[in-house]
Length: 402
Ligand SMILES: *Cc1c(COP(=O)(O)O)cnc(C)c1O
Image 1: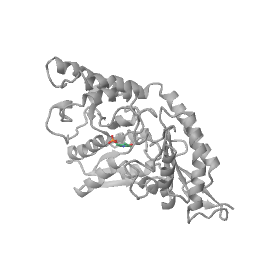
Image 2: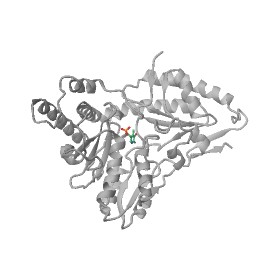
Image 3: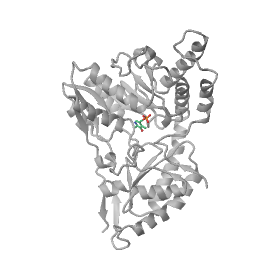
Image 4: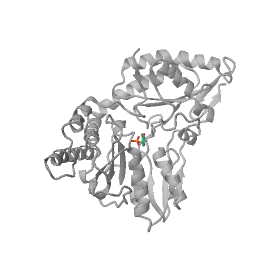
């Protein structure tokens, strides 16, 4: 049976061209890029080429790119590094309730060390309120950290407007753009972003490499000490093969972006419309228009998301409940919770995230297999009222049909 992978927001397969590009650096090109001899020189050029590729993908300069081991590292570095570098100015961070744990848990940790954190609410579509953001700013605010695109729902933040507010108040703006690159345009100048975080394995590079953009002149205290690599901003011998892959993946991610995004959106919309038409009492979570083109997060009233995932897996369909980092826990998603989705519906939510390899046949197969699975699970569900009670899900909650 064919394997269908609709969990690209958790990780992506390595792109064939990326794999070819990195392979020599796992074999004959073994040098340490910090070495002065021939072996080092050969790979140093490759690392610097990758830096240019990353910079170009987000409209930055190569000197503003620091390679990291992952997206979570970039988020940690941006936030902890800022708090330490600006401790004379203040100790207040503004973020949102729907961030990735790589941001949220850094903030809760920093609260224990004396920082103050404002967690902005979001509306039923997962959107923050810009007036609330501006009102939260105090004399002590050192950082605004708001993600470019949400990994669970795909909701896109109003980055340009947030950047303008940050600039007006001379506050640093960090954005986790791990889910955004390759799906929507990401431009650090246009967004007025001071620090931007990327991860390789979400864009067709292998796991274990990432990058952070740090705007020129932005002082950040490094949290990896020990070597002079990355201009003292990140100690540790370069993951050369990973970095080469990261560079290539960034180059490919922004190539023909509009066309690729359009294709993803068509398939995603077909999946969404097909499910909503075939399965009653569903709720699509996320913004109707301001959303990643590849992401569909949908609640199926009366069933457990985890049971649905297991049943889909038996058909070789890989999807996810919320984020990979929280699946396996029985906690309902903090993202859906912040959006006001009732707990039962949050428990029933399932995320389908499409990728460049998703085909029309994949979507047809899901549309054929999923509705009977949902019906079977509902028939077994003690809370399923069957035909008696008709409810209709609308944005944010379920309401009875007249
Ligand atoms: C996956 C993800 C991360 C973490 O990236 P890793 O490279 O896995 O550490 C951070 N933020 C978002 C939005 C993500 O989707």
